[in-house]
Length: 71
Image (cartoon, rainbow, N blue to C red; front, top):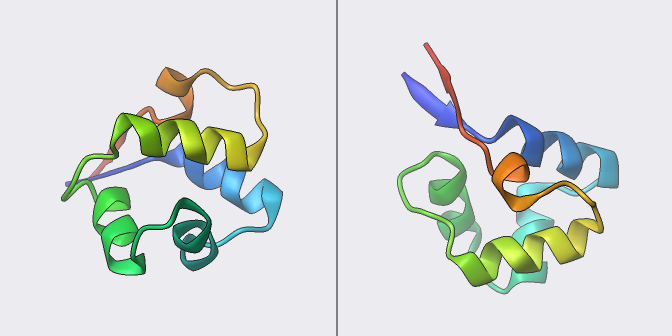
């Protein structure tokens, strides 16, 4: 099983951003953001706020960063 962030990934697509571009905007390494998306590491609260700001969306944090389990 792996957990993903479908709402966050959908917003990235809507904004035309990939994880590499997002990592630069949030000022964390690409490897770090990949580990966070793979649920190996947690997003820090300040990172979630920055990502929401970058995406310019009005989705609440708990929905934007909701995890779904895929089998």
